[in-house]
Length: 259
Picture 1 (cartoon, rainbow, N blue to C red):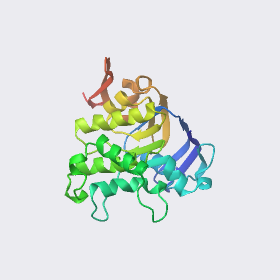
Picture 2: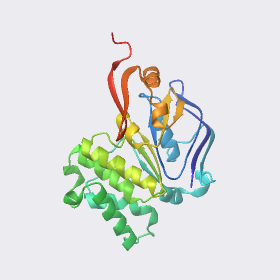
Picture 3: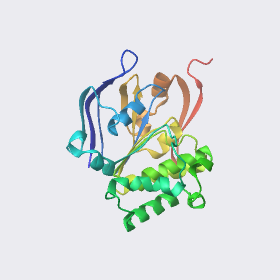
Picture 4: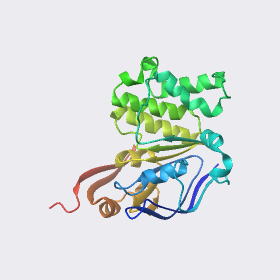
């Protein structure tokens, strides 16, 4: 199962555009999308999720175009976690996570044993057992973020598309989430995740796509892409890059033009 971007372009008008992007998301890998604000990370994820359509090129899911698969099949194959996480009605934590099982349920049908197992697993992975029956509106911002992640995990899709999923999480839950994504990849799934935390991207992603101004500047292993020179050129920062027994470590030291 692969998810491909083939010479994809997109434009919001005069302000922003993506230019002939090509890459492939393979089974067994967690791929990080990094780049400054406005580089195109969220737009790429929205196109892969079918929310917006490219103006040129093709998106291919398992050798088929998404429009030929239909929304139900796409929802079974891809789980999208948007950057904006709003609640439009009051609902319990468990009930919201159960919404992740909608692509598998028959019309007017209840949850089946497989659905319950997927929901309970997602609740456990996101450390939400103590909150399962609470209204989502009563939770903190970080707890609400974990609920949204759990909903996506309950979907049990092969492809996870996550836009800044660690935002609002404390360090322990950031690590738990990225470890969960890595485990999903190890079991044959695929993850494409946009991150502003360069350290998290370096530690947990198998491959990095570095974007700037709607283009892929560089693609490859974290230690090949996330060099001092590349980070200075794209982000305008000075960074310390080193390797420990836990993997690649990146710490920002200041702006590249600082004295």
